[in-house]
Image (cartoon, rainbow, N blue to C red):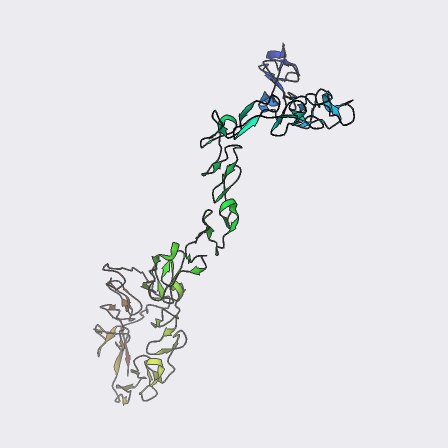
Length: 499
């Protein structure tokens, strides 16, 4: 198996036979021999130092030194010329010292200044100060600044050394009476202004006078939230999360708020930015002042609260499920159960007690001979040996009648129940509505045409409503029969004989 080994430092190529030629700490690629130079060096072999004025990796960083100082090509450290000091060589030697590194002491007579570069006693023409670092005051020039300038024109300055007249920054022309045109500034109007957002440039210095709503050296910063005007000096009093215009201070309200300071919500029935959009919530629905979304009152649902709760649902946005039993109806607002005849209780879960029947079990059965009655209809259910509407008749001695099973009737139990009857001997009355078919054995309703519910009284085919705006609104629901519905089983024959 061939083993590959890395070349030692200073070697490269196949079998590491070639000698690297990188200088000044440059790293040699072990395959190609190409040099990667360290900071401050360039060249194929890293043999060249950075050019004056640049330094660092790839010589891409620019020196910041002033007064002709050079910077170290590796670190960028400024190497000050005689007479200057500081990190950027921007400060003259302190009074009493001069020369390279400001290490030499002046030897001038007391009260006589020393030049910070040469150490000469007395300043050269055009300069003054203890270290001769200041130019002559305006209007003077020459040796010791004791000569008076003769510039007669307005906006003219005098050269501190020669006394010659020239235009002040911001002016130009033979008589220095012409102001720099817009967008220009400085001596002879040579420089271009850098003001943004309509800022006005001062011709003499180039400084920007920012318009209302902006700050920054270049007028490039918008006033922070809550401030506006010139220099962002004024305070805006906008409430409830509103933003203010940085120029005028006018409050820009969030949707759902209005007023000078956005302190008022939209009036009822309106929403959105500036409250100019009309709400579309029906049946007491509450409109969100920001979005216009409707919060429906109890018993209603839909984007505009224009749809009643479907059967079996109630409450806010129809989120609650009814729990009513025995074919009772559920109030779509509160969910209270409205019991049908023969049942009572909070959920209509109880059949009427023996001896009572009808709505709310308020009627008494009118049966004789200890017969019970149907809790809904009050029809008497006769015990063996009795018959008649009130079970008041006794069977004659030696007679009998057939007790028919569910769905059958007649003397011999050979006749099917008619359309609206069901159960043993067809004694029960069907409760199916809207054309539904009634099962003769158990009374179960088979609903037609989109009707639903135990008695097919709920739902129904599409119908035109005031909220549908001329369009048919359809609802399709598939209701599984409750588990309490059980299909009776048949055992034996369809009739029983009782004598």
